[in-house]
Image 1 (cartoon, protein in one colour):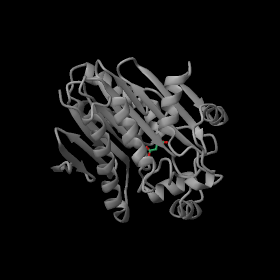
Image 2: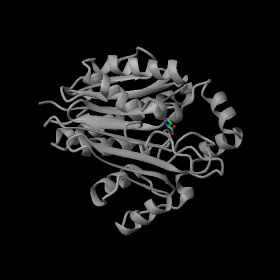
Image 3: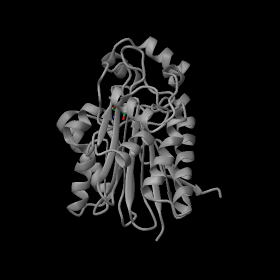
Image 4: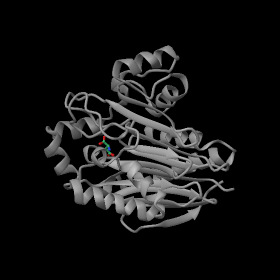
Length: 310
Ligand code: ASP
């Protein structure tokens, strides 16, 4: 059976000067995830690898280059979930970990818990010997100057994102050769968020969900809206009712827009290898590798393809 990986680099009004770097970034992440799958790696390994590539890429709001909170500090959230067992691990409000997705995986695999937050997450990272970085090492000049320009959460988001409550969180979903699915999502949240604010991204069923019986989802967009409709689980419940992954995503995003005026995006893959990348924001950088073909897009209804470079 062939494997599929889909990634997103966040749903929001991506400005033209970040467009190419965002598309290049998601293409590179999808190829990395696919090369893990091609070597026989699990869906879980593939989503972690793909998300790490984007956490290390400063164009995205996760890991290095994350959005800053109202105190001008990074506070990172991430989740990973294994569709075989429904095991999940998450971290929230971590400050000096370059790859929060790997810490989330360690929470899943090495603790009896599903989420660790803030100081507790950092103490756990230390206890397993995970490298830390100085907090300022994750702050880019670009993000510092954007933060200085936009003093308040609401005004900044409205101005910057063209009325779209979103920013460039990253995520990945995959189905491996054995038919197992997994998801991962990682974010710095929304610029100028209150200290301690946690959005949808690390919350199971909201920022992500994976279940071998229906599929895997990673969400992006206005966290408080996604939380209200439990977007990832909502999409999968529609898949369970017989909708295709594309229909389920479109219906659920439309519901979020009608019910709570929230905009966002989602990527989905099913155990039968259906996949979709859908959004209601102006743009979302996404890429997928399916049978050695790399698909990608940025604007609504855009779907380019090229052969995966070996
Ligand atoms: N959902 C993320 C949050 O609210 C932001 C995003 O997806 O851009 O923290």
